Each structure stands twice: as structure tokens, then as C-alpha cells.
Length: 294
Ligand SMILES: [Fe+2]
Image (cartoon, rainbow, N blue to C red; front, side, top):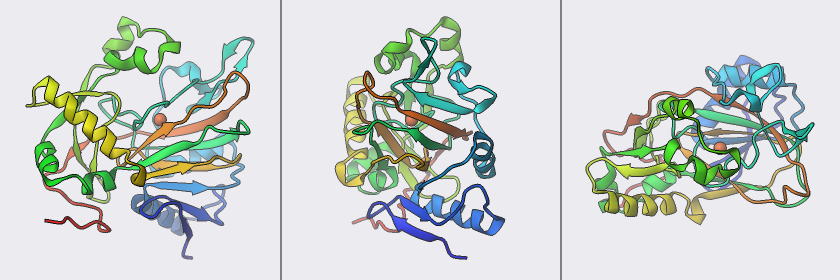
């Protein structure tokens, strides 16, 4: 059976129509997986699965990652991260204000997360869209001189340096947390392990580049971050309750947008796929819908 695929954007992102994620046979699963590798983000509407079914489906894509700290994970389901501003007995039941800034999940870890699959359970009536950026497109459209400058180089991603900038409401990291999350160096031109295509791998936790002095590196990082999230590379998702959205952190970035979290409740549950050590692209391989001018 060929999947019914409805594009979300000219270049990437697709809605998979008519699949019940609670009952997916192996042949359909393979088609979904291939579509994921082509489109980078997949949307499923009206999903009504249990946390067990959410976990079971995600596990077919690869090993799961248990998020830290554990108190934001669903009781009895450590593989499910709760993203919400809701509280119970004056205590948060999930992580609040997650992802308000362009990033890919786990970019500040030695093994960044391969993918994330979030399910919307409760939404504010307005706002709270999430934006997704196509970082294959970002790489493929870099000016030649910039592409040549980043090939073979790594950027440093630092949780310790930026934690209090991006998560001021969570309080500072303890020494033990800092020790568990040392700075990491990842290739800026990253080869996807399945497609072989090159993405631009940069994000909000990056601040240095090997072999380039820090001032110039910061200018280059700022340029790359702006380029990666250029408007024409971005799909803006307007959530509906029941949406389940699977994204590939190796070739997209995402950014939550503000909403009134003093007035409304938003509740989502996310599974997270374990990743691999990012692989340096030895040569530039654009996604085939792009062709280099030179
Ligand atoms: Fe995120």
C-alpha cells in the first residue's frame, strides 16, 4: 500500500494521512520510515494512542533515550517526556518553556538525539505554534565561500555556558550536572547516517569553531544560525489536539513560539530517539532537490 503523503512545505515535511499508528504492519512501517528520511518531519493527525503505544511505535525507529532530569518524565513511563506548564500540588509535572529558541534536541550532548516524536494533548486556544527549519536546504544554499570554510570544521556546543540563558526558570546547573554535560564538538557539515545527505548542523548552544579565532567564529556562527532558519526554509506548525509530529534532529531545527502560559495550559508528551556520534561530511552532498550552482 502506498502511503498517502500530503506535503507541509515546498521542500520538506509531510503529513501522513490515513494511518492508524496503533496498528502499523511492517510494510507500512517501512514506508513511514522512508518518508521520514526523505521529508525529515512527519505529521499524523487525530492520534489517540496510549503512552505504551507511543513508546512502542517510536522504538521501531530505534533505541529510546531517557531524558534528564527524570522528574519531567511521565510517571511509570520514563521514556515519555512531559512538556507542559501544568502543575499538580504546586509542583511542575513536566518541563516548562522548553525549546523557546532555535535548536535541535540534544545538540549539546555527545550523542545528540536522532529524533523526537511529540503528541499534543492540550493546547491554548491561540498561539504556541512550533517552527521547523530544513537544515539540508540550509546547507545546500550556503554561498560557496562559507561552505568551503565550514567543511571539515567542528563547533563547540555548551550546556554549561548557556543553560541559565535558555532555562533561567530552572535554576543553575549543579556541579554534578555540569560534569555530566561537558562541552562537545560536532561537525558543522553533518552527514546523515541514512540518507547520506549533508545538513548544516548548528544551533543555539554553539559558540566556538575549531581553527577559527573566537571573534570570527562567533560571527560565522551567527551567520549560520540566521541562514539555517531563513524564512523560506521554515515550516510553521499550528497545533491541533491529537497531532503527533515526528522530526529528525539530524537535519532540522525547531523553535517553540511564545503563548500565554499564565492563562492557558499546554500539555504534550514526547518520546526521544537515542542518537549517534555525528559524522563529519567528507564532501558536500546536497539533498537531490538542490543542485549546486558551481
Ligand atoms: Fe526541542
